[in-house]
Amino acid sequence: MRKTFVILITAVACLLTTLTSCENKEEPDAPHIVFVVGDEEYRSEESMPMIAGLLNRALDCRITICYPLDSAGFVDPNRLDHIDGLDALEDADLMVLFTRFRALPAEELKWITDYADSGKPMAGFRTSTHAFLYREDSLKRHMNDQWPTRVFGQQWITHHGHFDDGQNPLTSVSLVEGKEDHAILRGVEPFDAYSWLYHVDGGEWKLYGDSDPLLLGKSLKSGHEMRGNLDKYPLVNPVAWVKSHKASDQVAAARVFFSTLGHPYDFKDANMRRLAVHGILWALGKEAVIPAEGIDVELIEPYEPNNSGFGDRYKKNLQPRQVGD
Image 1 (cartoon, rainbow, N blue to C red):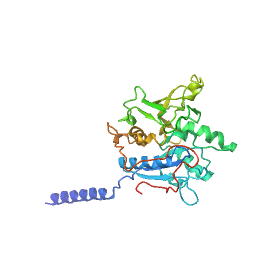
Image 2: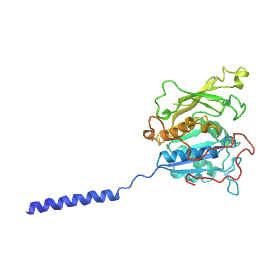
Image 3: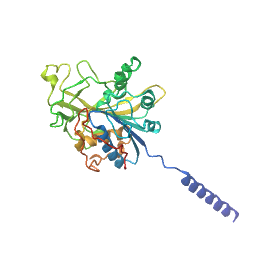
């Protein structure tokens, strides 16, 4: 009888321990993804919130979008010296960067560079090959050229030219042979992009480090071809790749996804939206959630961006939207 009682007490104790452990076990926090936008040409203030919404639907995550704001709190892509809310990067699990020729004050720049050096993953689009433009000798060579090269794989070099911007596609996009089974390319088919082709590889230039191209673009109308410069700037160049970034021996090597595509009209194509969402998921190490046919990228709400261009071609009085607003 005593032996039976001891066994019973032991069993109850084990059960209580198990229940207590279950009650105290916390679910891991949803990843925090921070979008940093600020370009005066390609309407990233319109495309990136749309991509953020699709990403949020595909993955249980927290999302913060940091915008350049004017003194009244409206989005002002022409403001080069301020992006609001960059302290969100302090606890970010992934940074998405789509900026162009910014000259941020030191305290704002530090949020971005500290994140990039942290060993955490990143994704970047188009003009992030020239994310910054500083005039000071102490910053300009490092931040203008070396930083985007090390982090994303290339700096600003040249492109094949603006022709009838937004009227017709200017780049034919195809999958790199042998990369068709990469998780980022699930459900991605060849398409035509409105982005004019950036030169990143060929002639005197090579993609940096272990950059591994997934998509190629062929210029459909090229100023370099007209000028006879194709030996330096060939008609075909990578437009999307993956790489690693390791800032020091004290941090892990971060996954990085980058695409030189990013014209606002590119994102009207489901293939471009799928590429962007998949690239971010892959960088985050979440490629297992990408099905064979690709993530659902049907638009949550109409996406009707302004065309690319400088000056006042952006939407005025645009409120800084967060996912769920």
